[in-house]
Amino acid sequence: MKKDTQCVHSGTLADPKTRGVNTPIFTSSVFEYLGMPENVYPRYFNTPNQKAIIEKLCTLENAENGLVFSSGMAAISTAIFSFLQSGDHVILQRDIYGGTHHFASAEFERFGIKHSFVSNKATDIERAIQPNTKIIYIESPSNPLLLITDIEAVAQVAKSRKIMTVIDNTFATPINQNPLDLGIDIVVHSGTKYIGGHSDICCGVALASDELIATIKKSAANFGGSLNAFTCYLVERSLKTLAIRVAKQNANAHTIARHLETNVNIERVYYPGLETHADYEVAAKQMKDFGGMLSFELKGQRVESPRFLNKLELIKPALSLGGVETIICSPAQTSHLKMSDDDRADLGITDHLLRLSVGIEDPDDLIADIENALE
Ligand SMILES: Cc1ncc(COP(=O)(O)O)c(C=O)c1O
Image (cartoon, rainbow, N blue to C red; front, side, top):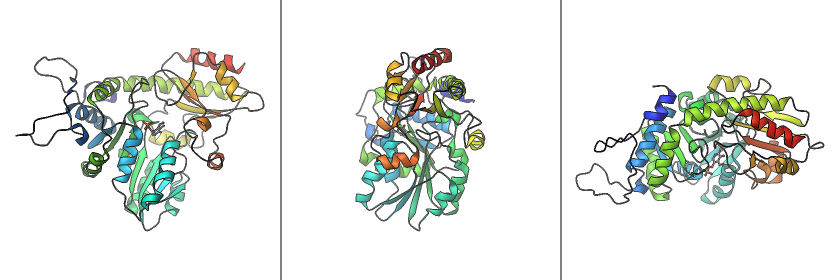
């Protein structure tokens, strides 16, 4: 089946009694165990509603198995910690979501885990490998500068050294990019973003081989970040329109990025679908389309970022991303707030940088709102 069809049909646990076409919400947190192949319990990641969305997500990401968590950070932290012990070393791409950057900086050291932040170039990643390196963690496109990592190149480096790879595929979505096909071991998503898609869900996902998921599952039951049946149901409902939403978001973002490039008040536009993007060729090679996220730098001497944000009428300055409504944020004040000023400066995250999460509205209305605020 093609992605649009998979979104609608895969994983549905249709109820044979009522013949309703949707998965029912199984409200039980208590399940009888006699005669059952396994003990069912929400924190064991095996309730019917959890399994239904995992099946859909596995189909979409070409994964054997997966786990659905209560947040993206629960998925990321659990997946990573499941494989680490004191004395290990982790390489992380330095341009990643600020929360993940902070997670590594704040948590690893006290468990005796060393880490290095490096550029997203496979050669730099390879140079940072130590005898005790266990995991290479990347994000592509990256938050917030839409850097593109050559996923296949990193996977090859890691495989040749028997190091596990994890990628945050949140920005791309399983519609635009399938990293497991490119040799990555574990894919994580903040499902709070495109998978949820309506700015009303917090969840996370980890997808991988049966073997790796079995290991993560053991730790996940201890860490306890599972997802409840009602939210699972909302996720399943959201996933039915994932492909159609993302297609519109891809198209809108492309149109807006092209338009912003021509505006005299804008210094620079970051969008992997623009031929001017430094890694356009790599993006075109590994992505089916370029996503709904873009960033741009205002010309600071002409436009003040807070005044611009205040003048927008349709587009709301708001945290998070991936919903049907277009929102905008200053990464320096939101997603990357906890990063030190020096680290932000090193990465090129300035106070004039704004990140746009493009929704499914008509692009003409979005462009008019931006133009009006810039004027
Ligand atoms: C790329 C990316 N990964 C992970 C996360 C963390 O997800 P959550 O907020 O669902 O824990 C975020 C949140 O903004 C994100 O943007």
